[in-house]
Length: 139
Image 1 (cartoon, one colour):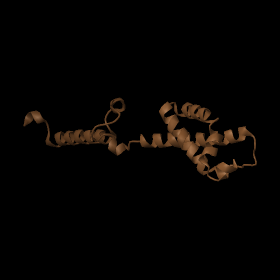
Image 2: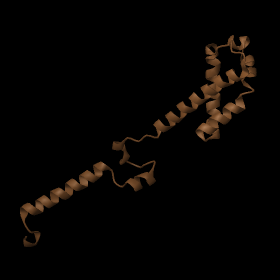
Image 3: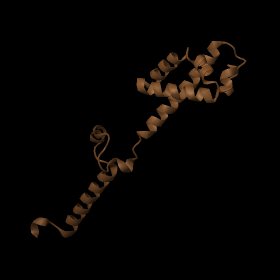
Image 4: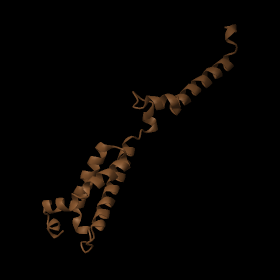
């Protein structure tokens, strides 16, 4: 632990190597993706290396270090899922413009509120024009 705290990468690798498969499984369970789990595992090990001085090294039990690594991995997975969810957000005013990334959703929802409003407004104006000019058959 002392060598890893001094920046020795090989010492750090020997500390974390027994735990990497468990960290990868945890990340995969949280993200449901092997590719994403690998990225999250790498990110969590990088964070653990840079924040190793924050681990209480007086805790000599291996399960305490493992729990610390798993907490970092869990936090990285949560952050990843939040970023992924935020990137899938489509503002409502951009929803009806141009090609959509989610045609099945657009088809299920029907037209946008703005399009619906414009259509209703045009119908109202036509009805009003007909009502003010009289019967179109008499023209």
